[in-house]
Length: 372
Image 1 (tube, rainbow, N blue to C red):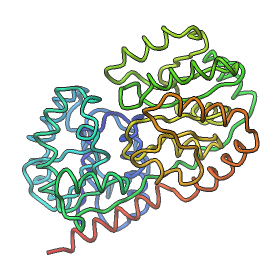
Image 2 (cartoon, helix red, strand yellow):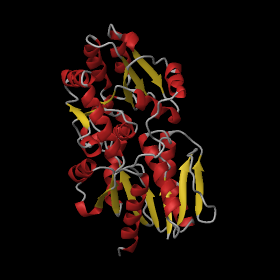
Image 3 (cartoon, helix red, strand yellow):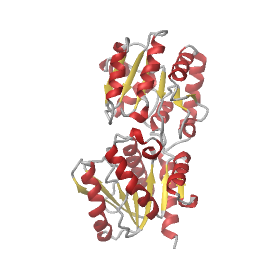
Image 4 (cartoon, rainbow, N blue to C red):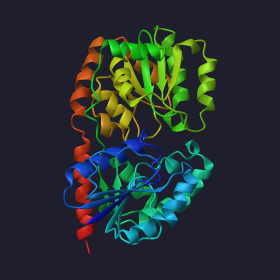
């Protein structure tokens, strides 16, 4: 079978969707010795386990513009599907060619634009509302990354349940607890000294960082601790910086921007607590990564996060600042509870692997290809 992997609208290898796409493809190439793979990309995505005889990387266009990548996906990719005699095309990031020339699988990570439309840029929301239901309707199978997203797809797109497979994401084996001179050097280089709370992710409304900063202001009145926010600017982030500037403890709020992937385990490992107060998550990879590095997790009691964290996190109401602040204070004052969450989180994180994600995805391919 000639399998095409459509990675053309993957934002980058360092986003949640990019992490999924790259790790899935690397494991597929490693595990599957029977099929030929044609990976369609735009720009640079690092891929390992590539065998030039069975794996073909086709860089369709070198352009970072989201609109141009969408246009290339719609008008160039169908031609390439026909040219390379693709039997099954897996589109890993929400969208696929509207012109269907072979069996198709579509991964839908979340429906944030429907559940919390105010957190998404208007231009993208219009496109998503117009096209995503079509993409879902024409796909032979849909992969969702959580049961929560599966329920949302059924609710909003009216897709029959038997056309949807939930395939949970994985955790990298490179994520582990770290405590070394190098770790302390990295933290110091980022301006982090002493004890700190941690958030890792993009800066955008859905991540609920304004309420997190308001909660931190209450925590800081009782505990001398810093708030470290790691991640790139996404969109509609001005309120986040305004909230940080408005608190009298603004000197204790550290925005690092994006940091190197190799340094993330160091940040996770040394934090007093990882806070993930999102309004909505399709899966919630940072929470899983935090557990794999031995960080106690405080997470929103919404969407998919209980699927990821199970009984290894403290859950909060993301709409209530007091709920967030009280849970942080409780955990900071309870060393025994923090240690319990660390051990439970480490154990739970071992249930997730990218190899398992890839094996379950291969089963979906076989089911679709063999279905008449």
